[in-house]
Structures are given as structure tokens and as C-alpha cells.
Length: 494
Ligand SMILES: [Ca+2]
Image (cartoon, rainbow, N blue to C red):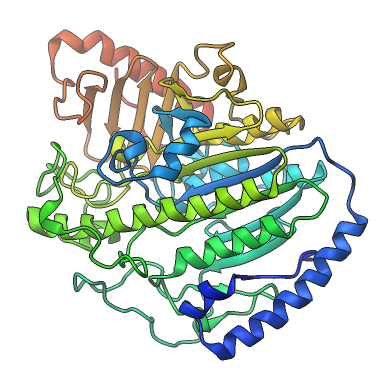
């Protein structure tokens, strides 16, 4: 059961912009009830002054290279401040580049290549201890805000409470609040999703599907959770929806980027040269190939606005944390990146760096400041890293590796290789020195890139006789790992 029965508590000026007065009255009543509940928990909580609070911030389809903190065009001053307070990773790996599998890897600390090959929703094995369940068992108060996109419910996965939960269903057959994007595209993502109250009932006043205020509401839920934390340490998991499609200008930031001013990346192409496994998937046909530069620029302009707004939301959460004081561990990442025109793709179901290599910043207690790490790591490593930094034993079901020694400079490498996978159509291995082999079993193709010298992945060396040995070595290492993982996809012949 939820032990912290509040949701969507916001400051007056914000919610008056986005909800009706009628709903505001209901909200105040909800908040009042919640504050009484929170107070009750505070009285019964354990004294834990020395234990670190944890905030895990996860964006959705956020491509690292668009942000100024990674050298990109969108100003992200708050993430730059966060990076200055901690470690920025340039070689993170998401594993499986779609939302629900990547998020399941994050909360289980496991590689799910075998479970995800079918393309079906990952069922949680009862022997897996999830990250929030682990923290809750160790005495943390575990709260969830934002997009829910793994199997089950927050409560069944180890969260004690929700605050601004946003999940599938609940629209009761009513139409989308915003059925078309500003560029005229029909909405095909997040259809029927709604915010839910503490009783899990839909709050239709906040709209059906994505809206220009979805992330602002999620942020207010996160802020409420931080402000009303008990004397237990807090584990707060915040999943934003930005900048996932459908792309709407954030409220108050309409037309903040002009399409004509957008410079497309060097690897922009109008279409992908072969079927990589998702050529007719939902994400790809949102803007069908072959795509004009103008069509991609128009989508990128709104995407950039969403990223700028996401940075503002992170800034509000960081301000709230600073105001509250205490010891904090702050993690910012995305479930994966996005193509957005690169390599002739729009979606995320691929193994190129713009997608497979998400942003990652870790800051706070025990983290050196102004550190940039260019070594391999995976999002499934975040869970054991948090455990080590918080002084919590790592459960046996976790397969990821703690990055603590890497962060503190006591190790130079954690993973000689990282891996990527998508259904039974893509397998990838990337070495610590940046050589990357992608295997497409369904179409019997490979690609070999040297990412340090070819960051846009334009020069496929897989058929170059000078690299036969290197390709064989990578294929052997990939096959060995897939065998260990119980993967059923065909092996790449050496
Ligand atoms: Ca995603």
C-alpha cells in the first residue's frame, strides 16, 4: 500500500496556469490530506541523518549531443552546473534502445538481451530485487514521479509512494487533448496516457496524452516529494516524458527555436540504406522516409525547445534539493538517445552512438567535481553504483558493476566491452578503445566503426581487409557474451 498518499502538489502560480480552479480546490484538499499522512510517517520513521538522499532523473529519448553540456546547440545551464558538481560520462551504454526495456534494465541492474529478444514486455522475475525495493528494505523512503513504463505498478516494484504518476490508460475512451503536433503530425505516441492520483484514479484535468505541461507537472510532483520527505532518507525516481514524441512546444516556450536555424548533423541522410530491424516501426513512420532537411529541421526545433525546458525542470529540482539541504546523490540520464534524422532514421531502435550512448551525469556525496569520464559504462551499473555510494549491500540478482572505483579514480576501466541489442535484429559490441561492431542477423550485415576517429559513424570498415582480424576479435567477444546471456539469436560467423 502507498504510505505517502499525496500527489501533484504544486505551488499556486504554476498550477493556476495549467489546471482549472475546480481541480485546484480538489488538489488543495488532496495536499492537505497528504501532509497529514506525511507527518504521520515522519513520526514513525527511523533516524537516518547520515544516510544520503538519492534522486534519479531519467529523460526520455534524450540525445546527448544536442545539449550544451555535451557541446551541443541547446543551452542547458542547469545540467552544466550539475556536471560541474560531479562526473559527466561520455561513453555510457543503454543496452536495449527502447523505453521499457532500458528502464527495466535500470531498475533491475540486469542485462535483458535474452528476455527482450521477442520484443514483448519484460516480465519481472520474482528473484530479481529491484533498485527501489533494495533501497526500501535498507530504510529509504522510495517515491516515484513521472512516466511509468515497466511491467506492474510502482508499488509492486518497490516504490512506497507516487507523486505525479503518469501511466498508460485511464482516458475512458475520451479523445487526446492534443491530437496533432504543431508541425501537423498525427499523434501516435503516449495515446491514452494520463496522470494518476495516489488512489491510482486518472486525473483527466491534466489532459489525455502528452501535453505542453506534462513535464512541468512531473517536476511539481518531484518537488513535492523532496519538500515533504520524512526523516527517512529519500530515494526519488523521476521519469520525464521529454523529449519523446509527440513533440509539443513546452508551455511558454512556443517557437523558441526556428526550424531554419537548425544545423543538421553530418550524418543526416534522407533514409537508411537497409532494413536495420525497425524500418517501418512507429518511430520511423512518424516522419516517413525519404525525409527532407526541412521536415527534420521542423521536428528538431520543437525537440530543442523540449530539451531546453527539460533543463529548466532539472534546475527547479536542484534548487529544491539545495533549499532542503542535507546529503544528496543526484543521477541524470536518459533511457536512450534518438536518431532525429541521423543515418536516415528518426527513431531510437538502432545501435548508432546518437542513440546507444545516452547522457549520464552523477553528482553529490562522494563524487569528485568537474570530472569527465570517457570510459565504458552501462545504465544497469547505476543501481550497484548507488548501493556502494549509499552503503547498501548490492543484491545477488544485480549484474551491473559499481562505477564507484572508476569515479574516484581507483580504477581506469570497468567494462572492456559494452553491448547493445534490439529484438532479434541487432547485436552490437563496443570496445574500450572505441571500436564498434554491429551485427544485423536478419539481413546478414555487419558494420565496423572506429568511433574516436569517426564519431558520426560514416565510415563502415567492416569490408576493409585491413580490419579482418579486429572484426573477428570483436565478433568472438560478442558471441561469447551472447552465449553467456542465453541469447537465442543466430551467432555471427567468424
Ligand atoms: Ca525512451
